[in-house]
Image (cartoon, rainbow, N blue to C red; front, top):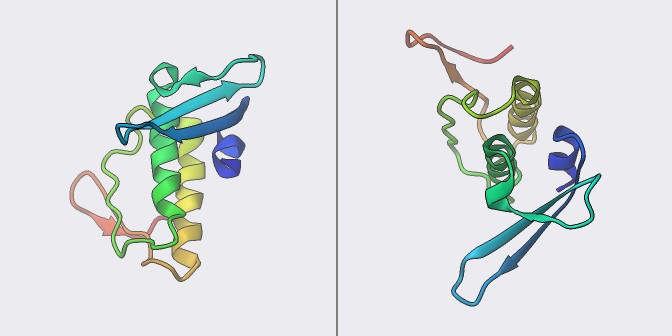
Amino acid sequence: MRRLAARVPRLSEVTSRVLEDGRLLLRFRDTPFEEPVLARFVSDGTLKLLAYLTILHDPELPTLIGIEEPENQLHPYLMRGLVEECRDAAASGRGSSPLTVGARGRCGSPR
């Protein structure tokens, strides 16, 4: 939550609860509001960033993480933060180095 709040302005709280049927209920609270809202009322970009941060900080980080077109639905302001998070995960020794594939199949490490 701390990392997500640092990347998404005004986000002050994310709560989760497992429902009886096994689904996960997520609620988000913006600083100016008293009551949190359900995830379906939160931007797609915030949900995508939450998913990326969840996988990047999983104690059992997978060997390979594929992120296709992360710029879709993710505000350009958040892209730099996502790259930093990927680099931090790679530098932690828990995963492999970041690798990018450009539009024409060019490969390289992000700089």
